[in-house]
Length: 399
Image 1 (tube, helix red, strand yellow):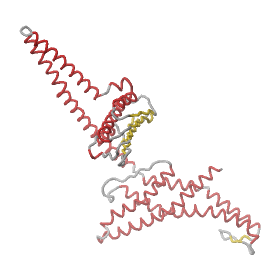
Image 2 (spheres, rainbow, N blue to C red; image 1 turned 90 degrees about the horizontal axis):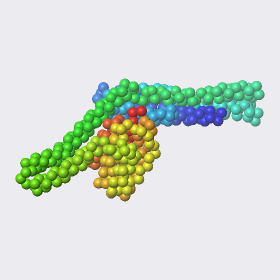
Image 3 (cartoon, rainbow, N blue to C red; image 1 turned 60 degrees about the vertical axis):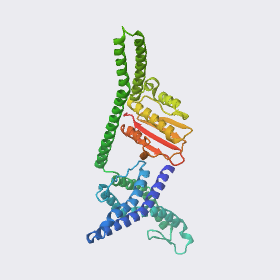
Image 4 (tube, rainbow, N blue to C red; image 1 turned 60 degrees about the horizontal axis):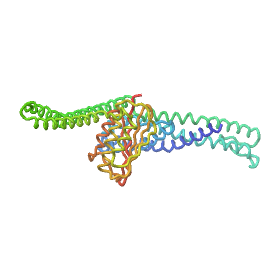
């Protein structure tokens, strides 16, 4: 019973506040209508787009209220560009019209019915103290006990109607969600555009990575191997005439081959670090922390098998972020938290440096974001001047 009363009280509050936003919707609707009527005279045309944006404020209030009521997020459906051509504008206007027509009525019911219950009960028992009786809320003059009983029946009817308030509140919230959430076709189109952009970014990053690997192999490993081949060729020609020079050439060839092998291993590690295979993501991140000039503390909240590509992306995010911290942050401590769930890998990197990190200044953050978005992931950066800087990355694991 207590739980039901709490639900009724919550619904009454929701509907009463909805009466206030209904007035805002009415004013917004009238304002838009006035601007539209002025458009044929040329006066309203410059004001139409600002008026639509202004009308989005009460719509946003109702969107957030409905989301809290239903316990689920209702994303904003607006697109960049002119609000006049935005399909969401028509849905906003439809909500303003419906809410302006029904919100005040429902709010009045939610406010008046509980008060009516209290008034009927007070009238039914207090009439003997008032000469001539008391007029009830439905026009019945209570001056006798039979009429008092009838008043109590009316109060019981009001109470039964009050118990329906959660249904009315749910209807209002669901109507708001249906109109104020992105339309299914719009969601699909936006999703396709987002995936197209992330695919393009992923292809660009992949191409840049291939070019880097090719450059490293060409300028480093390939040049050293060519030097080895040349030294061995000269040694073959001098083998019979100058054994001492041949010995020096073989030693140089061995050193050059050793350097080439080391560079080749470095290139291989940049493709997929062997540490991930040997120690897993947590161990590989700890190894990065041990090599960092800035002290690093690694906390593993949730650890399980992840797709190799996702673990590699997370590893390189940590490596690139630690490199940024070392170069730019002037930090004395870095904290890394690995967590998430079987479906999402969550990574948080926090440093106590100077803050003020800006993705637009070419500090490597744009590359980290592209790496995350290539896996349909997200990156959130918080870096006020003076610090701390907090980088959060979520990478879906495809399960």
